[in-house]
Length: 293
Image 1 (cartoon, one colour):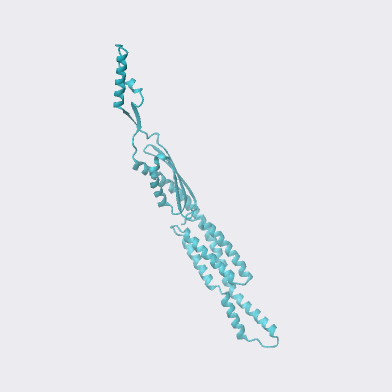
Image 2: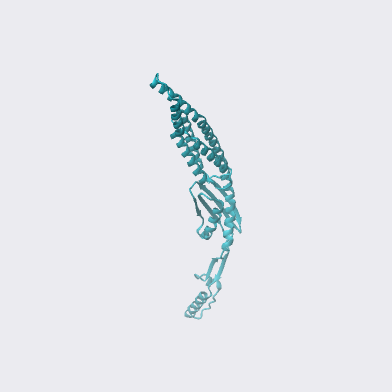
């Protein structure tokens, strides 16, 4: 079943003491445009995130929002700058000598108060593990996102299918009315010739020839056959699980072209009214197809 390009999905999960939240949203677009917004410290995983999105989505402007609470995963490491501490200790010893024989005892607590003697750093993170965790939560969000797109796709397919039925009905009306226009033209031509010639006899062969020329001029058999073919292909595409938005857009342009040709060929009020209805349905259908992946 076809999918809409409009969707939203969200997932939240705690992995390796990291609380990860991912939101995915998209709108229609001619091609795939993926934007990822995440904390700068996790920017190394951006390409992996985009690769996950590309596997799940083929068209649309997709925005991915990732937030990470890693406070529980932060492991602090305290290290001693031995060289600097020794220099502080030597300097304090010199000061003690200058002050005289006063008893002075240097303690670790005293040295620890000096700047840069003790440094606190975070342990290096396993980048591959973090990237895998982000993608795992993203996959869940994409699952919810695709479910919403599938629901929207079903509604679009139902609407387009109904409009295809209307177009098929209009096509049948054109096929039914087209031969009648030739017969009416023949009758009008005969009556006009008789009125002009009055007492003189009308050559039936001439009437038949003119009617044949007119019939060839206004014939829409080829256009209606192609219309039915396009409608059949569109119905098949509606049932496809592959992205069909671009193909459907092209076919609808062809349907519109055939409709214009029928309108320009037929100099008949009834057919003109049917063509107006047909083109209105085509235009509505084209707007819907713009949202199909």
